[in-house]
Image (cartoon, rainbow, N blue to C red):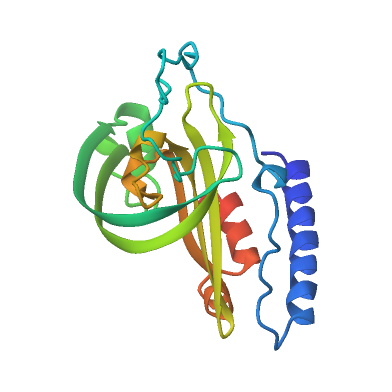
Length: 245
């Protein structure tokens, strides 16, 4: 990374930091604002899901029958199946992981060379010189590396969130996205759920467990005064990104 790029990054960071600082100063003493309700497909970064799909199968009806081939019951199915329908996602996460790694590497090297004859006599004639003519050059090098890493993680989350069907794929699978915000005093808890579900996995009460969501994207976090003090300052983050040591 050259000096021009570093200067550009620092300039942009300082500019963004100044804007963020002004926004924070303007909101001193106020609770963090909740996000406005909006169409998920209009938010920045939204992209329709494209997956390999089988050929669609058209519904057929048997003679003198009230059922179509894809019907799941005599009465209308109240489970979500169209764009704009709502279903409840039961988010249950109980993960744990333990990983321990140790690495050790050692290498030693020793080189020596003597300087006898003419050079040795010259060194011996120097008053006060402490040079051994037979071993005037001596090289020693050593490398020793040791690394240790461990991961001990345990996560548990159990909650529910209502999600909206944003897309129906050609094979009938549903793309869902839901967001829930709860503000308590000066802290906002934010929960986001998105992914692809099969209509057959939706239960009769129009709920689906999070383990049945394909390509699941679940975000659980917060923002506000408590979250702010837990984050390093933007200057420290910039230095962590550009310093090579």
